[in-house]
Structure formats: structure tokens, C-alpha cells
Length: 186
Image 1 (cartoon, rainbow, N blue to C red):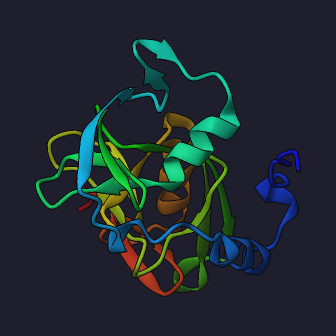
Image 2 (cartoon, one colour; image 1 turned 180 degrees about the vertical axis):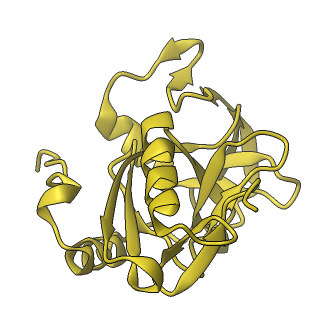
């Protein structure tokens, strides 16, 4: 069956996005402990582009498939994991990029949903927090099991604009009942 990308977030309610995000079934890579290991000869660049042996992977379906078996290891390295094999992969920054943002509500009633470059959907909440770096103003979203998405610059600007409209002290943003302060807020 050919892959059909999800509809644009703007056409969906936050409840519909949350439902889609919850329905995304991923393999239980955290439960697998394969004995066979090696190097995948793959790399995820800081801009979210996946490479194999130096060449970009141009098929989005392949990137989605590989992203579903990606795991962060206890030593902070990354691996592609199946029940039979674990292959190391280099991740330059974060393995995912949040490329689209949808906001519903305002203040403490706001909910934020993000679409990743792999078309996965994530609602920012206590289990999927937003993190704002202290050494650089780059925000990250917890996706799953230690894997994060860096927010694309336009998404970051949109998020900051929403936070500034709230005029809170400290400056920050609410999503799904959780407040995320933005570093550098007063």
C-alpha cells in the first residue's frame, strides 16, 4: 500500500492530531537486545537529512522506516535496532526536525502539536516536553525514549511569537497543561 502523507495540521483539530499521534504504532526497540551489532554507515545531518555511505537517502518512505527503529543508547549514542541486529548511526544534532506547528487555545488551555520531518506527529506535554538550550537558543521537543526533534527556525519563530503574545513572566508557552519556560525569559 503506498504511503499517504498526513493532511496539513491546519486542517485538523488538536484532538484529531493527538488521536493520530497516539495511533502511530512503533516497534518496541527498547525491548530488543540483539547480539549481532555493527555500523550502519548512516548519518543524520543537523538539518535532518539522512545519509547512507555519504549519499542522501532520497526516498521519504525509507527515512520513515529507519526512523521507526531508531533508538538512543545508554551511552547517548544512537542505533538502528531490530530483534536480530543493532547498527550504530551518527546523529549530528537531533534525529528529527519539527517542521510544522499547530496551536489551539491560549494560555494554560493551549495545546501545541508538531509534525516532524518524518511525518510523525507529537503533542507537546509532560511526556513530550519542550527544552530550550542554555548554550544556544535552539529549542528541542522530546519525541520518544530519549529521541528529540530540533525545531526548524520558522517553527521556533512561530512558537516564540505565541509565547510573547501571552505576555507572561517568565516568558514561556503552555501546552497540554504543562508550562515550558523559554530560556532568557525575565
